[in-house]
Length: 429
Image (cartoon, rainbow, N blue to C red):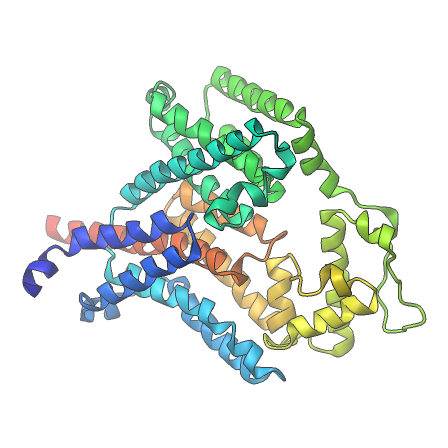
């Protein structure tokens, strides 16, 4: 019986990887169940070759980062707070083992099935929104967090999932442009996912989608007529979206940067500290809040002389809350908020050395994508790097799983492609 199961390893591998992919947009409990079940299943198939195959060092980054978190927790004053965050950093380790053991998956099949299911999930969310409109609920009460609430998802993470599927669908244009634009199923998927992306209302995700799409058109579309037509269509869609009041406000109001925020200067002198009043706090835009957080964090890191190793994962939030209080930004306002910047978050928690290590990791991913001429992998990494400027993705369960899962798929697949290439060379001689 066991031998029969092992002979079906390829089919089981595809099932295990797909079970994780298809639960990514859903409730955390379902996603964790899929990961843990797949990990347990992988233990029955693990062998020596899985442990001896050489992968890009980026594949093992989750193991190194977990060690960093453990060390940082041990050196924190609040050790228990540091260790309480370890569970979420264990998930990438499980994902790494799963992808290495079940490496014989079809990457294209994973993306095809994932995109079909995500289109279905998004259709359900759009249906729920339309039902709400029919019952007299205003649009601004049905989008962003409310749009993805049915699945218990953060709109930024769901927007990233849609972004990945859209790039996968658009990559087909490079393979066969005419066949793609004549395929009604392709057009339907694109339409539903684009609408879902808008309703997620994440500025960072929407902006990077437009930027990458525009760059992709310039680089890959050689026919001038098609290029001009595509850019005009993209421009018209953007124009019409901007005419919807909610989207116009959502995409423009949050980027305001007032004079007093630009010239805000943190200080340790309590007599000179700026005290934000109620009206000032009510008028803070998304961008202004991020600028304030960055200025406060970096200034106090310098003054406290923790630039090298940060405040420690167990203490960082307490320090940040304390400094927010000192500017009257804390109680009942931004207490417990993260820094809303992934790079700054790592710097604040772990210091410049770990930040440099993280940047090297991202550079390695980008270089690998370029080396293998994998456009889809490249734009997905670029999209994450851009979103990292405005959100701390790698602090929540879904964000961590989303980021590492797709990167692992590409990293493992690249090695498999290389091994097949060299094996074919050897056999042909």
